[in-house]
Image 1 (cartoon, rainbow, N blue to C red):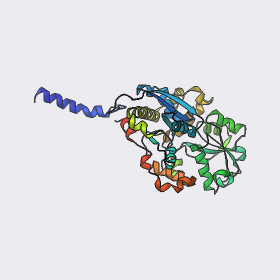
Image 2: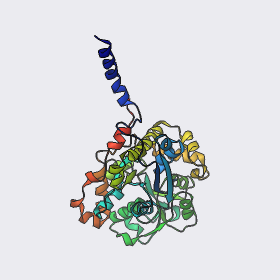
Image 3: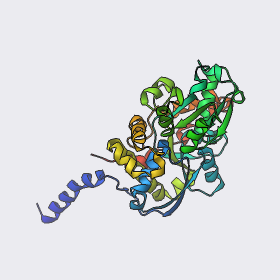
Image 4: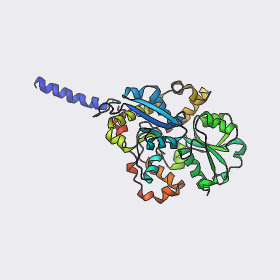
Length: 346
């Protein structure tokens, strides 16, 4: 065998290792757009923890991006920023991709943060005894992140199971984090539909009673029949088709964060996020993270049952979605190609 043949064989033998290297953007170059504006609604919630980890641990920078994160009161506000052109990408609920398709305005998800909804409905302790089921919440006030967000969809869907219409309850945008705790403490709402760590803090203070919980995969299985895609990165299709390297860099950073969170110690997570995210109690924050860890996507990929489960959830609670169900093409709301490339290979 000649030296040339031996060299070619060595290169070929090394190829699989190169292909399997973690976080290598294969067949991709530098991001076409290195400065990216990302919108999110309620970034301090554990619902968006992978985003904060990607930012704080420098994963976006290592992928070649300078990401400006604009934090809004809720997911509907960040969606407005995307559609209005002031944001390039959103970290928000996957369900918005279905809602916007129904309205004839396509957006597409490409990196999953949560494979479980990670939300819960809690009733203020002094009114909880009146609530035996969703039919009993008529006329009550609920603190959500912002109108039109997934937190509202969860409580209106629950109300529908009790035969109530959306306008039979009152929803009030209270944001996320400390403002949620304040809303219960000052009794400006009867209940909340929210994410952790605010939920766990209120539970520890014995101020709420949880009546519906999707913070575990068991809870998602019981309510939705399987996984329920929650937070993800989504954008208008042009970002993925015209600047695929930028989209890949974003997905790579989120997948790295997803993977890091699978094995990170709760104390390491608490040390990574901004101090104000702990809401004054690091131990409770760590407990809240440990409780929801299993609902964080392990790899940024959309589970096979996710889109259909989400659509069914929307159909059950939204007559407009139900009327157009046959027209909705779930395959146009998501692509796994970017997370697949970013996924860590053994």
